[in-house]
Image (cartoon, rainbow over all chains, first blue to last red; front, top):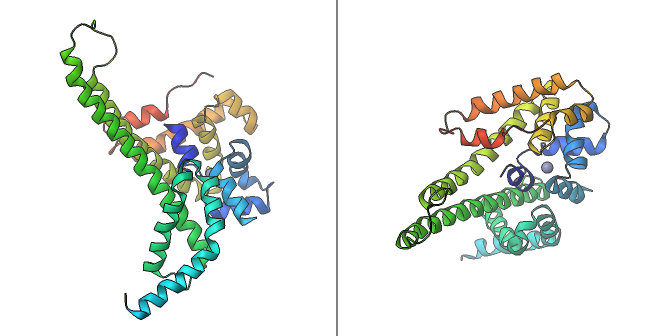
Length: 54
Length: 209
Ligand SMILES: [Zn+2]
């Protein structure tokens, strides 16, 4: 259930503003959690969000 | 429909159609489980746009936010229904199992216990998702809390503390402290609603180090 809530409902997704800020500054220390969420955990919701903004 | 309403609808239809293909792609990519219902979700958003007429806002941004919210609503409804049906089917199977006394008494929980369990899990899912979203917003208010968020997300995704410490390049004790803070926040938040503590137990099953 935890997996479903995080992976499909996006319960741990960063705000959109921080997600876009991370794309601009992937090495910003204040955005490390976003880097983990998108790159390592590969959140499909955030990846789709970035793709459509791209 | 009166002519002005008709015109408004046509105007929205045209604007909406120009975004339809990209919204559909986004929806199918972000929410694969809604693949077959993606067009229905967009229809809901279109109806909402007609009603709310978000003229002054950035329409594209408004549409994406609305699509995401409607998709999440649908997924949550689905999950609730699935759990309710599971509870019902387990409840009704209790009658038939009573008529068959040939099976030896099993150690597994009885059907009524299973139905209660299914119903409890339905409530858990919704509460869990709300609490975690609030937790993320709380962390994002202060830069000092962002590492707590990362450590907690890693733990929720199954990483043991030693690996989290290595990945985040901090001592393991620091990870324990961050996880303690996160769990304490979550506990404070849910203790009134999660009467049996079931959500808390689901979230914080102890993971091997
Ligand atoms: Zn995400």
